[in-house]
Image 1: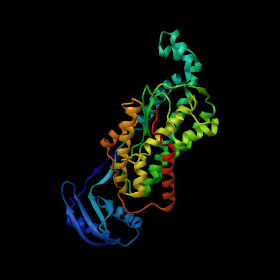
Image 2: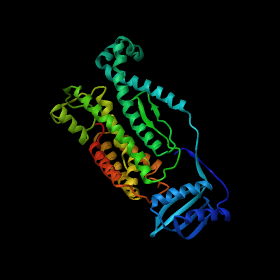
Image 3: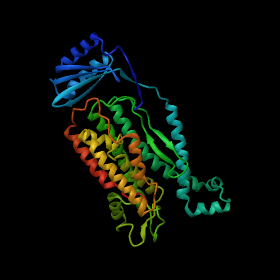
Image 4: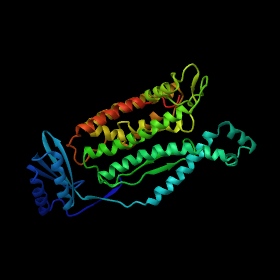
Length: 391
């Protein structure tokens, strides 16, 4: 989140309390209220809603914002609780130029990696001719430069569509959101991914679900076709025993696609697909989506699971943490990958939090259509889950 809270008159002003009670009384039978002055000024109202929760909250939100308070709706002991928190959220300004500069740098960094990935033995020969001067070797042949473009388009296309899925969903819900920030990295994959930043709070679970699920589904809609195209154009070769950590791992979906396209289970018998500059970033797109769908914190999976099951997500996240630690320990012992993706995310989950924060309206459930999409997303997560990303 990226916003600031503007504070208005003190919460304990009798006139303000009367205004809030008047607005709330139109949609709620108020039983009592409690004033909390520290550490955050807020007023807690207890009672029973007179309208469906979504209709009631729309009314409450509009009226409370008018007098400088942000409402939160929840339940406790069979009663509806409305908390009026002092101040309202005002989105901070952002510069589009930053997005453009980062995108440009990320195109360059992924192009640099793509040239090396696609150059293969020919680039290695050029390096030998130019005494390991990587830049002279890469630009010694226009084919190297052109050969790096499929990698750029595939990887940034998947990441860009993923983040634009979030962006479009947020805009449809009239949430304030930034354009994607791409993160360049001149080694490894050429990028650390992309993110958008919400600049207004999530109002309800439906908004939370739509924004959270739109990114993974949009990204998969690009990644899976690209992966199929990449596999069709990638050869199957004898690889023997691969160097540890150099072979991309299998998920159920990836293994099935290789079987459908190549007619055999791979890797097997020392053979495997030698993924090209389209197949590899598409496979990595599945890995990014898998990680994003982990049901922890404010990852996309955390959004989806909280929207579906509410605070049950908090218990699910604790179980997932144990799974991450177990998988990380296995990789550390079995593959000697001491610093691996699962241990890293187990650590990051402690830094950024396992529990997803509730939306302002924490009562209104998802409708049937959203629930079905949510369950299908969980199935997709299982299909793309890759216990050993690199073996």
